[in-house]
Image 1 (spheres, rainbow, N blue to C red):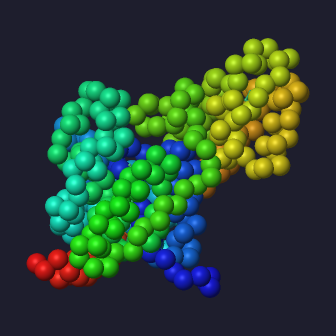
Image 2: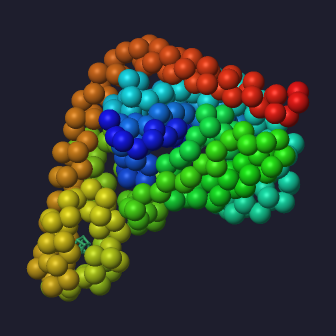
Length: 330
Ligand code: TRP
Ligand code: SF4
């Protein structure tokens, strides 16, 4: 056990699909590390999924199981951390309501993702009261466990900045109830998806943790590389190559640097270079897939693990809410 003071860590993921490599590199690897030394709460944030999927809400439950299968198979929870379902801990909703009275509207209206998501996903009407309050609900998720640290992908940095601002405002009004949560980002730059854009569920360009070796090969082999390498004899620049973002996250440093050198002097072909990362991924994900297959046979067992997590989370959340109501005077 480490000498450092134990922190409370919270993070969440929306159940809108299976976990992909971007989740693994951007957040889940940090989550695994933290659960070794800190008190961790990892939440499947069903209400956040509902805020954008309200017209297709029946899928949320299936995706909740998908995410739980992914998490348990990579080794998150249940002995080392609390994994739970946000909407099963109703106290989150109460804190969200109370915070919503305190958060000035302009703070939410200027959140970049609010306008961006509406632009990027025009087929969904996201101009709703609930979606505007998305970051307030996220703040409630964090504060209700008095979390000190929140490991997330880079795309969440603004939300976390806002969460801190809301925390300060609450504490100023009602006394020092909550610690200010720190954002923990990974150093890994954004992963490219199979089409060269950022790997994201909404682009349909993801490589999933549960993908088989054949699928991994099929997805990576045709990927675009640095456009300078029109011919095998043209030298390239790995930093401009979408595939190399995968190397940066999943190939060990020595091998990676060797490949980068070879790329720059046209000493290696792209297919050969891709095969290195393909093989690393297949090897990395093999034990995970094996465990997942086991869990898939017994979904009841997985739901039971989640219910145990819900109960543990509830106890903490209820205690915090007692304190919050008293501080406000309700
Ligand atoms: N908004 C986060 C995302 O889209 C998910 C999330 C909800 C979250 N509540 C949270 C992340 C609390 C960290 C802490 O990825
Ligand atoms: Fe990308 Fe590798 Fe091809 Fe270089 S050799 S362009 S890093 S795939």
